[in-house]
Amino acid sequence: MRSRSMGRRREVLRSLAAVAFGLAGAAGNTGCYSDSCADSYWCEVPPPEPSPCDGDPRTATALDVCGVFVSEQGDDNSAGTKDAPVRTLQRAIGLAAHVRRDGQAPTRRVYACGGLFEEDISLPQGVELWGGRLCAGGDWSYGGPLDEQNALTVIAPPVGIPVRVLGGDDDAAIAEEDATSVIFGVRVEAADASASDGKSSIAMILEHGARTIVQSSVILAGDGKDGEPGEDAPSFRAKAGVVGNDGVDACTTNAAPGALPVVTVCGDGIESTGGEGGDGGPEMGGDGTSGLPEPVGNADEQGLGGFGGSSMPCKNGKNGAVGADAERAAGAAGAGLLGIDGWVGVRGKDGEKGGVGQGGGAGGGGKGRDATVACPAGRPQAGAAGGSGGSGGCGGRGGQGGDYGGASIGIVALQRSDLTIKDSKVLGAKGGDGGAGGTGQWGGSGVSGGLGGKHPLNDSWNACRGGSGGDGGRGGDAGGGLGGHSLGIGSVGASVAILETSTVSPGQAGTGGRGGNAIPESELGQGRSGTAAFWYRFDAPDPEPPQ
Image (tube, rainbow, N blue to C red; front, side, top):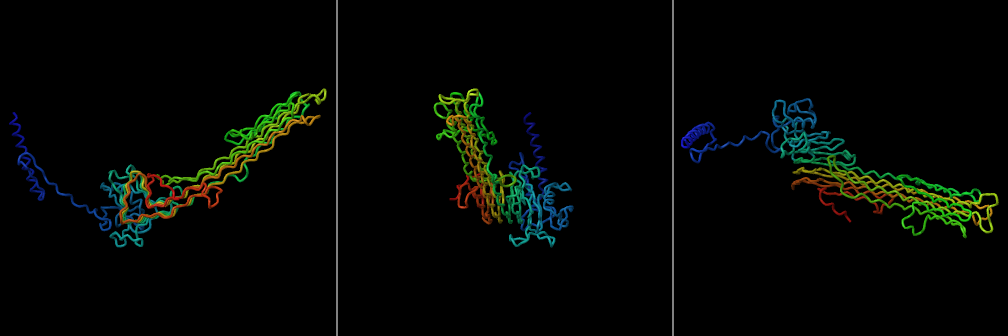
């Protein structure tokens, strides 16, 4: 049984051998051979024919089959051929990224004439942009070498980020994981402060996962905008305290309660309350209560209520403590963040609110009679009531932190992107200066306490007055904003290769904004200046600021 099966197998192999040798003869250079003449055969596969679209962008012939053509004199309703180019780069990119009308695969390439294109573009991963073409003669050849005097394809929109390379996860991107976008023969010029925040200027962004080669091109960022100063707190004083209530006179009532407290409501649940006056009594006056909020520790016994009269006359309430002035807030620090819209800087810290003034302590109450003097017969016998303390002033509001200056960044490369710079220039310009911090508000005034009631027959037994409330503390001056960076390349979690034939340089970074109400020579509250670097990694440790 086994020998019969093996025999059939050998016959099949011989038949296949005959077919293979026949194919070999027909194929010419294709050879089939075996190492055992019976068991198996291998056929040599000829290498694929070179594509007419292969080659260096500087020398390869521009063909209709290889790409979509765009010219300043084109028409977006045209087919995008050499003889009928489209008008805008984004229209050409859209045609190159999608299957053509005849069902053929996308060309994934755009040929652009030298000239000015005032539009911002989004380039799907895997689509190439070959600019700087000489179109007048109809051959669309490259007009290099790289020379800023040459008529490269200029991409210079009046607003926005000129070039955005979409990431591998984007719906418009080409599917292959290793697809790379080539940007060749273009001059990208970002306008000043043209990013979506209206502050920074960024010429190109590589979104997450984008793979891009920038070759024989010039990438130029514009200047960042200076940060706006922080808003000053109001120039008028904060809310003042309330005058304390007066106590009633002696011999006018059988029960003489002390004057009721007054309250200043400052917002955010913060209040200043004067003390309640001491009651007037026939034989002894009551003590006044202390003003609130009482300072921690209160070593100076501020805002305490006065004692009521007994064998000795009463005591006045003490003045309330002044609210604490807020310190100047810190200036902006840190590098800021890179994201899909570019760079976001750091504002200076807002100034804090000043402390509320303590209410004054209330005056002690008086008594109505003693061994020698008493209220007249037939009249009430209660002594005079103490006056309440005046309430303190509210704390002043703090100023607002200064805004950050806009950055100037040639290329931003985000997470998982891969950037190669070859035979190109990438230049940052001037970063914007940070805005100054706003000034704080003066605290409200504390006001006087109420008067104690009078005794009609003996001034020694008059009730005592309340103390004045303390002034509110001054609001804090705010910190200055961060100065804008000037970077050739800014990256976060990206791979960047800068070949030796390229120039990547920064311009001048912006200075940090001054602290609010600070003299020019002072560094108190000043924001950190921006960084000037040819390449700055936002995922690397933050360098120490210059001394």
